[in-house]
Each structure stands twice: as C-alpha cells, then as structure tokens.
Length: 108
Image 1 (cartoon, rainbow, N blue to C red):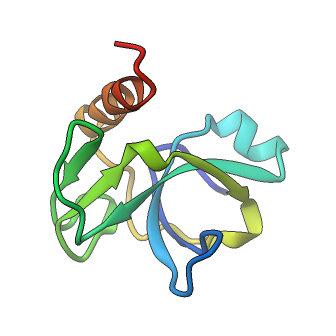
Image 2 (tube, helix red, strand yellow):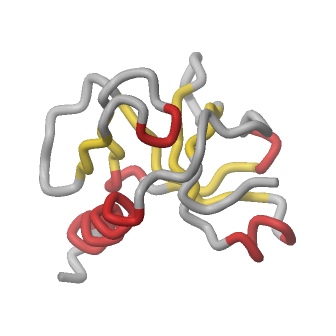
Image 3 (cartoon, rainbow, N blue to C red):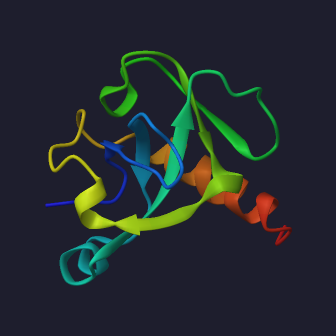
C-alpha cells in the first residue's frame, strides 16, 4: 500500500530516470484513487524557500536530498515502485514540506 510520508522511487513525466518522491496524499485517497500526490526529491537541488532538506537515511534515502515542493505533482499510482525505500519521514519534515508548499503557492 502507498502511504503518506513514505519515500518511493517513481517515474516522473518527461524524465528518463526514476527518482525518489515523498507521498503527500492521504492514505484513504491512496487506497481509492488511481493517482498519488507527490513531491520529487533531488540531490542536486540548490536550497530555496520551496525546498526541504532531508537527511541521508530519512525515509530510506541513500543520500542527503531536497524535497522540491514547487514541483508538487500527481502521478499514476503504477509509476511508483510499490515498496517504499524505508519507513516514513519524520513528522517535522512533513510539517516543513507543508510550509514550503504554502510558500511555493504564495499562501503564507
């Protein structure tokens, strides 16, 4: 099952390689919908007000990464690897992602 706050590898539209994504959509929606709301992660991102730094090991990430909240997107569920990289990311990171999403959308 796809669960909120877990990191999965996923294909993203227009990209050749799979990349880690943080699942944002609620568990109930993930059970019923054919798509999932995610934020992609990058190891090469420059930090900005819309990025959240995730430590190595967080959610199973093998390197420090940044959740790129200005790129929030919805992808088909079958574009995600079914197994997460690890356990859920810490609540504090999910709260930082929420805040960065609001900044990216100019809802502060």
